Image (cartoon, rainbow, N blue to C red):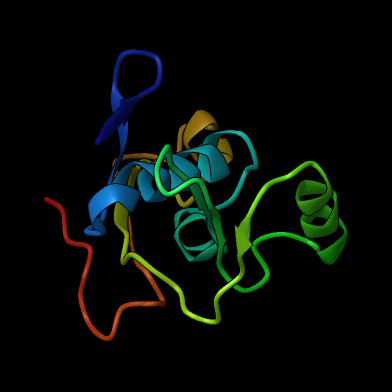
Length: 126
């Protein structure tokens, strides 16, 4: 997935993960754009996933606070707070390590990140 700001690509991100690919990539994009994380923080952040079927909210360790889990369960959501993590995102920001740095004119530098969940891999761009 490529993301543009204003009209120029500034982020490329992707992940394996079957039905969770969209969740993995979207959460990393939101972490950069809305939460001001750098690309490595955004990719490494805990994830939460829900899809139509099975009707379960999957939560990685530290993905939700215990209070939030309790509130969701009280509203009837079924939670699966497994010990396992999932997906292995990789991404590249063009022009800085974060969106704030890019907006300041960070240049043409490529800043790559590979998911800490991955046993191996690289984020490479040219």
